[in-house]
Image (cartoon, rainbow, N blue to C red; front, side, top):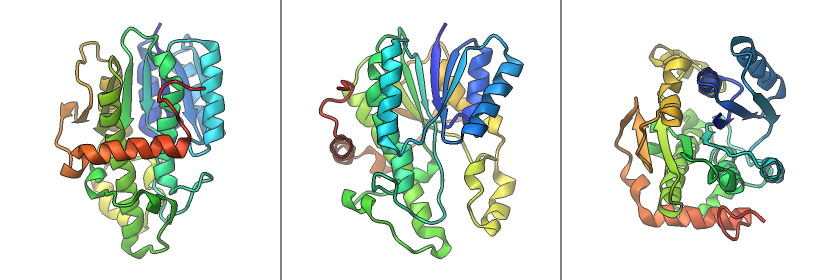
Amino acid sequence: MKTALITGASSGIGKQTALALAKQEYRLILVARDLSKGQRAVDEIKSQFPETEVSFTSLDTTHFDSVREFTAKLRSDGQAIDVMVLNAGLFTPKLKLSKSGHEYMFATTHLGHFLLTHGLLPLLKKSSDPRIVVTSSIAHWVGYFTDFFKLKTVSSSSLLMAAPFASYGRSKLANLFFVRGFDQRVPGIKINAFHPGAVQTDIWRDTPGVFQRLIGPMLVTEQQGASTQIWLASTPDLTASGEYFVNKKKALTSPWSQKKSMIDQLWDYSLSELGIKQFGEPE
């Protein structure tokens, strides 16, 4: 039996991926912030697939000590992880700092997942076909990095949501930097990113009403948004690694996302901020 760990699994495309992998008889380790929503997701999975072995942990990936505790527990259990789906993400209409002092979207979608992967890499290496799937976005085209220390300060401007959208794009650009940096450094594990499309999920709940009305007709269903994620996690003939997919096909990414110097700088910055001496060798 294969094991999949999914972050952001309590709703949206994360939950749809959990349901799809349960149907394929995966053992599931689900992670999300909201305990009640997570338990409802577990109940839904068990109602449809009673034989599924599924657990849920309430975890905010911006709480780095909690991430370390969670990964240490899984390592002590010793069970191999075949697939990690790094799906947790959010949009904040007003920029704020996380408990760690980093911009919240960046801390959630990049630093927390970076630390989670570091802590669980020994379990991925136990798998015969280990994979990591990262939810990025076409929004990475508006992301940019010029000064990493600015990630510890936030603009108070919310004019036309420009600053929040730019920061959201930056967090999704960081996802691509991570995928490419990991692929260059860790052989034997397939890692890919994808864009799910504009999905009818809770991520839009904090955007202005006028924006919701404009984008509403263009949104795809959660099932449609999850299809590439499910495919990357489970298709038996996958050979690609370090790539970015849209609708199960390799897609173009921004020139900025391909700059090796920036990939390396973000990798080193992440190691430093998280206090990691050797990636994938948790102390």
